[in-house]
Image (cartoon, rainbow, N blue to C red; front, side):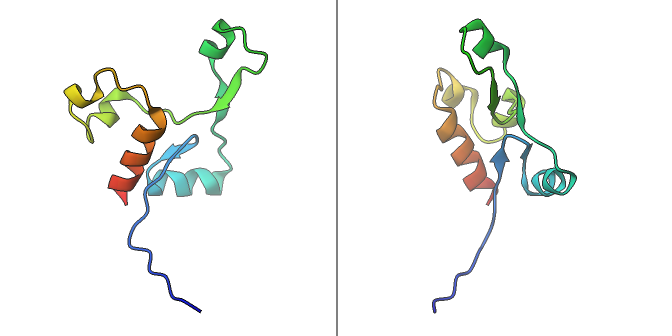
Length: 86
């Protein structure tokens, strides 16, 4: 058997952002699945999704305004923030 050392954890999830908030959300059974008006506007048959509620002010703690300009890849954004939290 091999040993593993966890040196940190970062979370950007649909129900919470940050380790403490995520732990609280899990313990209280908080779901991150919710209605998204933009899916309705696109006439999608499914209009619910699990998407982190990440405000620009929060993202500015990890990126400069120039880095965020025209930033379209939310997956990379979430991954970088979670990695930097860890």
